[in-house]
Length: 190
Ligand SMILES: *[C@@H]1O[C@H](CO)[C@@H](O)[C@H](O)[C@H]1NC(C)=O
Ligand SMILES: *[C@@H]1O[C@H](CO)[C@@H](O)[C@H](O)[C@H]1NC(C)=O
Ligand SMILES: *[C@@H]1O[C@H](CO)[C@@H](O)[C@H](O)[C@H]1NC(C)=O
Picture 1 (cartoon, rainbow, N blue to C red):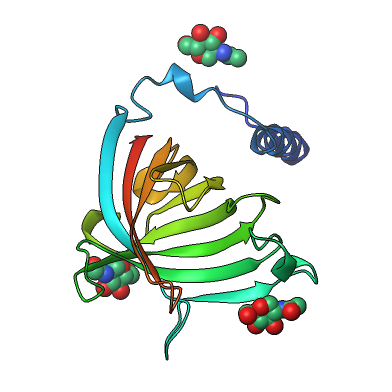
Picture 2 (cartoon, rainbow, N blue to C red; picture 1 turned 180 degrees about the vertical axis):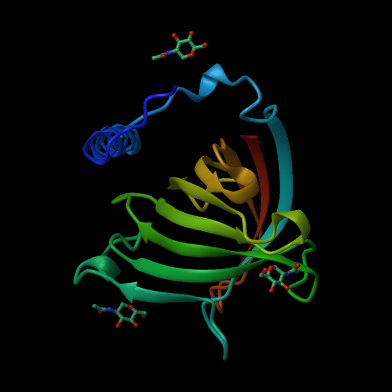
């Protein structure tokens, strides 16, 4: 005949089980590499798009948010901070297909030459990339032919992303200050 548990013993067992599950849920880290298929194979992706920096006109997408009292006395506009939500298009024309936006800021961070600190997220809206982001943190010497900036991370399809972005100014209107920049982004992700 099986021994039946009395109520106090039963409660003690429940209490111990509760303690054990509580301890388990407080586990700080887990070794995921024990499961070889927990992540897919690493992929390489090349993205190509045009970035439209519109600083004047009726609908600017980049606006000055700060400057120093000495900013205008430097050739590099040191201290100028601009916030942007710039459209990214597949073609050269602003009217071509929108694939995402560059949201963040660029700040003049070089005392001598034009050198921006770029801190931004590409927020993609196209196809399978819709909702995914790539984060850029780098130096942009805007007058140099090709500038390279690191991709420091990503979300969605770009989880675990790392890579680099190359920027080439396609056109710059000295009168309006508006620029179109061609981007090639090379990224490793899963
Ligand atoms: C994590 O799993 C790997 C692969 O099984 C193993 O070599 C490694 O020792 C484990 N690390 C820890 C901290 O358990
Ligand atoms: C710097 O120059 C800009 C553009 O000419 C002007 O709008 C701004 O007021 C100037 N800032 C200072 C602090 O003089
Ligand atoms: C992107 O996703 C959002 C939210 O799920 C959706 O509203 C939108 O229509 C999608 N855009 C494209 C171009 O697929």
